[in-house]
Image (cartoon, rainbow, N blue to C red; front, side, top):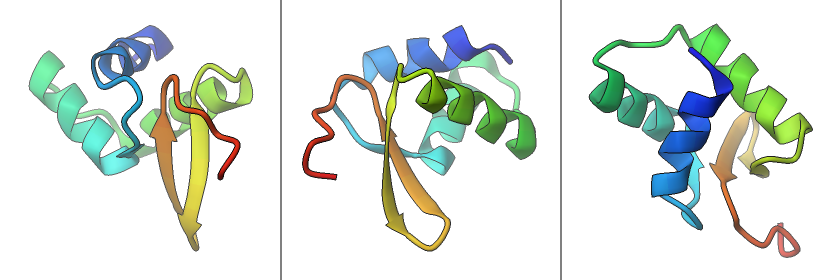
Length: 74
């Protein structure tokens, strides 16, 4: 799994907040394979760290991610 695969999925769902589970389902539908959760979350965290996608905290260890969202209200 590569970071640009996740960016491609998020580009199609631009300005929509998605959980990691929803992103995993989209990945499975598109590529017909299930990513390991550890690698998937590691890749997402790299994208957040490089400020390519935004992250919002919902609660204890619950996050949602978005591409192109305005994160000022987070």
